[in-house]
Picture 1 (cartoon, rainbow, N blue to C red):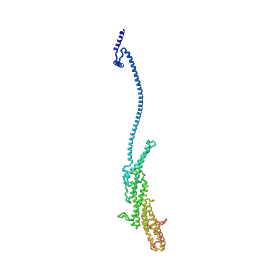
Picture 2: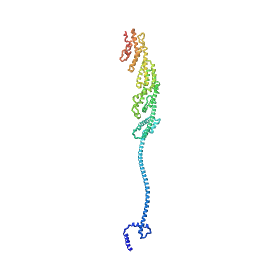
Picture 3: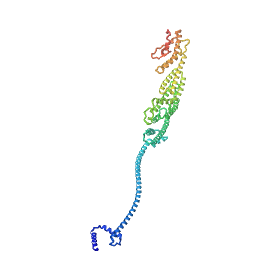
Amino acid sequence: MSTVSSSPRLSARARAILTTHHDPTATHDAFVMMQRMYGDRLPDVKALPERLWHDVQQEEYAATDAFCDALQALDNELARMCVVTQSAEDEARQALSCTEQAFDRACDLLDHAHALQDQIRAAQMHQRLAERLLTRFTLTSDEMAIVQAPDAPVDDAFLGVMDRLQTILDESLLLMDVRDEDSETPAGSAQSSARAVEDIRERASSLLQTCMQRLAHWCSTVLRSLPLEGADVTAALREALRRLATREDLFHPTMTALAETRAARWPEAFHMALVVGGPPPSYLPRPIELHAHDAVRYVSDMLAWVHQAIASERELVTSLFAPLAAPATTPLVASARSVEPPVLDALIHRMLDRSLAGCGRLLRMRVQQTLRAEQQALCLLRLYFVLSFYRDTLRHTLNETSSPLCKTVDELYHMADVAFVHALQQLHTRLVVPEQPGRDVPPALVEARERLDDLLKECADDKQDASIIYARIAQHLVGPMHGMCMKTADKIRQHREASSWFSLFARPEKADDPEWDADVTARWKAGTTLCDATASLPPIA
């Protein structure tokens, strides 16, 4: 019964097993699991289901425990990994922060690199600009050699270096610091720039001062070597003097040296002209003192020589100073004020006065000796006219208020006037009325009349000082002659037969005879003075 009853269940089970579709893979896995669980020792088939279920549960429990242990280990590892991960995260964050900082610094470095590149380009541009400025504001080696060489000639190259230095001084003013208060230029950079410009200007000023001193020395040397007459004033010398005129501390000593040299040489030349004559071998013209016996020619030759010396010296000085009044053509002179014509004329007169002052002493000594030795009124009158002519001539050439030579000639002019008056006085002292007038005219009156005719002929020309001479003759000769005639006429009234010498004075009047002043109120003609003096005499029988 039991067999019959269990058989359908088994068959049903078998049928179910056989008809049930199983996954081969799952079945394979189940067998593999059973082999792993039991190995070669399989349990009894009857107890297999229960045992299998129990064993499976145990296996599952064991697997679950193992899995839990594994999970615990995994959890521990995960916890450790979390710690490591957190540490790695912190380190990563720190690395990220460092990376960000490095990036920022890299950006800063990149910006700084760009700024450095800009600065490098600016520095290169400044370097090129500085090189150009140094080239413009410094002298070349050749120019420095010209300035520093003590034996370098003063020529166009030397003057060009001076112009270059003056240009540097003028243009360097543009580089001076003229910053406003809101200027963005750093103070340190501005100070260094100003200091560099000051160094450039100091160097240029020092070199220009050296050039000016050399120029002054060269001008002094050349001016001292110029001949007294026929001096050739070169364009370089004129230009050098023109530049020196901007520096009074160098110009006036140079002109003083020139005046002193000429003042020492002109008296020597005058003395040689007096006693030796011209230069060898001909010694022409002859010495002036060869004509010392002829007072008029002697004095005229001396004054003519002095006048020629003044003309030659004036030509030289005018040629030297003429560029000072011309428009400036160089930067050095353009920076200075031009010389006014009155100032230039005063400078020329001062140079002439100092150069020829020594000739006045020799001239005064010899003319004084001539005036003292001469006794004839006619010769003294001619000397008076000669001195008057040259006095007026020198006044137009020199400064009459300060020129020693003008003062000397003026003194000699007055001395000639005094000597002439003294000679006239010597004539009228001999005009003595005779006690018993005879038929013959007194010799003193005849001599006085002859001298009067000579003096009137000498004054016949339209001379500037003729009126002064007329007054002198009227006062010191004609007046005494008139008085002698009047006194003699009173005595001749009693001796009419002895008055035949009246015919000596009875000559016709001349319309062109000059007028004379016998005294303040009476005016009468020189040609009929003596006739008027004897007009009260009765006619001769």
